[in-house]
Image (cartoon, rainbow, N blue to C red; front, side, top):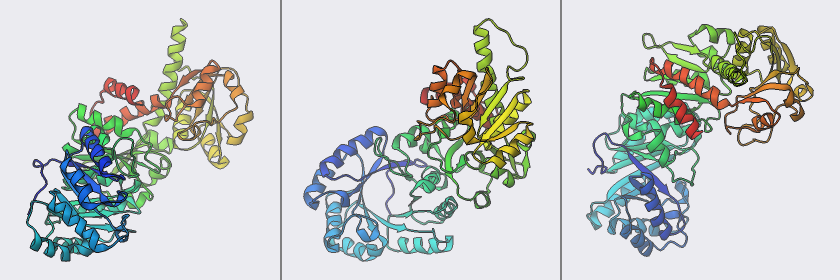
Length: 519
């Protein structure tokens, strides 16, 4: 049986290429190699007016990397709709011309493998693939399926799923450990993203990454596999952390946490986790090596129900942005690092401004100030409790008046509907904090308040950090207010999370350099 051309415990990065000409295939193979790919998967069914011998000769004579040839028919999720015999003949030509790997669907693999072996002996490796649509089968059914694939005499088996829930990926991870031949197994789509990153932990030697500028939903770029996730160094002992959110693709957390893990020589990986159901997620991923989580929108309040214990500030706030699995007993402990991160960012900005004007303040510069808060969700609750702890007077605006009223009651503030903020005129020197998604990419042209009121605020804070300088901050700056970006809050809360994740001290300056270089 053949083996992938790799060193032991080394993961291969494969770039799938789906372009319309053989010449473009060659060009993109060069790009893939330059970006860090080790192998390319060539989809012949995307080539227009495909001429098997001519096009394959162009491709295979000019290949800078090993190639996996795929000619996917419509019935298996591909583009090819012609004669089946001609399709199989094209795959035979690929083998004859020296393709490193040729992919056959399970439906045709057994029959064709026998004919292939009778006609020609070569070094080409035989990959048997199967695409799973809909809900991923049980682990028992998956094992039976893979046994059928292995029985074809395949050198490798490749299983592609389209999970409807992130919990289904666990079955794929479990399956990999039972396979008798080298296995490529992953899920497509945003809910399946985690499978590409974590599969090397479970023994998969090949992961897929797209070319820069050619995004594929649910597929990481080659660059991110190399630079952000460093997949070639993920192993069975790698500890898993991730962001629980919905959606999750916008997250910058992996850009910060993963390089910092490497900087302090901590064998950990931080991945986005698109979660639909918190209960099933925590029941499924209950192993010790899923050691901690960041919690994002819309789960910061709801997730408290699934924590075994809450750190006192998180208990008071009623929102959690960090969960740690306690090593001694596996219990989930909820923390809130948003509160101090946001309030200290606001305080420090005011102190810095006052210091530049020759003014020295004692105590919190928020004491006695009117603190106008837009949004009463998880981030809003952290800001409200932080402002209360500093002695501010708080007025809370939210689209859900009952939610605003509940939070206002907890912080001795005032509640109003979000739509009323447009006509709200604060007293001079007030603080404005936006904890709504307004202004977040891609809806970057919206702000929660009337532009003419910005001149009344001493400082404007925006929890949105994509883009780094939101329209709200630009307008506030133009009106003469001090501005604080959500990037600053993001950095500070991430430092708190990193300390909890690693039970160590985060390298603050290193993390600050990353944030302000990449965000």
